[in-house]
Length: 473
Image (cartoon, rainbow, N blue to C red; front, side, top):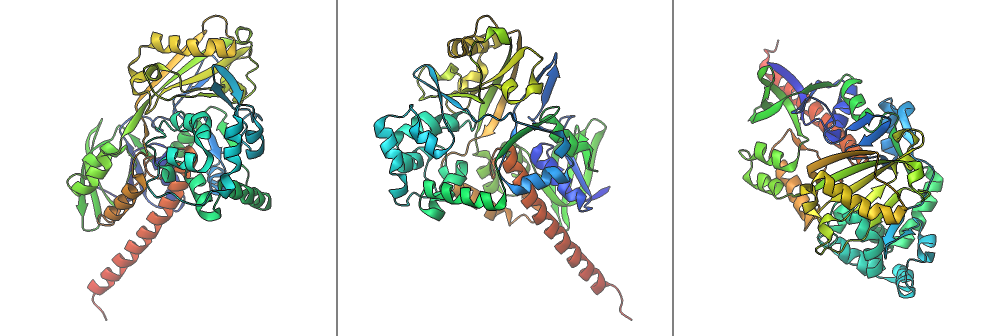
């Protein structure tokens, strides 16, 4: 029977990143994944010159440790920087309006009413407040006003983050903004200070993909760094032992078991709950209560001559306040061929369109034809498109993204406390610490350091016990 330092269950970005880091420290590690390929939802489809992404489209990074991880993984030469464009659009009253990302230009934008601008100007003078269970809506309204929520932050939270601003936990889903208020008393003051610090440290925000798409990242982590990735392994039993964990899985070659000193569950919360039910009913209940939003990505390819809009930006988000029409409305659109030149053939355009999330849960049930009809109903007037798409690909994810809803911060604190009762067990997935690729890499590095400390500690204990048992001369 195999004896491992660490067994990682789940071959998505979280599990693979931890495995890569541990392997570089000479730990004996295996990654078990029920599918035959690594990466989870991170898959790239390159056919007929169109490079589409099933889930994450890029890495948006401002953390130096992520830069270090990419370098150490040998991926610097594979990086594909996003095109140098800062234009982002929001759909307002049926038209595309530019939404500047910098505070000054944002406040000067014509999309705000005079009252909205005055309310934003008051932000530095609003006293600190809030609580650990404050929602995104409550936080943004308190600091910046209702108009900023409806026209900017609401679409962002409902679109890329797939959450409901009225339910999403602010400290969990907008940790940077909440931290700025806590530390500096004001978002505006915090942004100003961080801008000065960035000039001193040289840490700038960058967005990038990879030459062959996001799948390059997960394939590299799974196959190119001594990581032992084993596909087709579905875990059926998790048994705690004196020195760690005994784990059994069904594989294409039959049942397989290993002993591991440390186990990482890098799987969706409901699967982790099932595996841990026999060990901690309370922990399993916490995990099972974590809900997910379904997502649909409809990729459409056009001849450039069919679109009159210059597509001079990242794409757009739509405003959604619920209601009967929100179930089939488009959350947003990324202009992928404007961001990355290698995502469409010469003379062609790739637009990736996003449906679903907490506010549009029924979208995943729509037929392909209905999804494309909804897409074109929104895109055609906004971008002046004539004709139908030449290429269509649709990706559906029943469990798309976890929802950081309710008193999420307290729930995670309770989860962390319960984990101390199961030594050698770690939970690392996108329901903890953030959903972005950047967040997953940062969490993986922190988790790896913790696991290495545990391995070293258990090795020392084992050696001391062995010395006590050996006869002394």
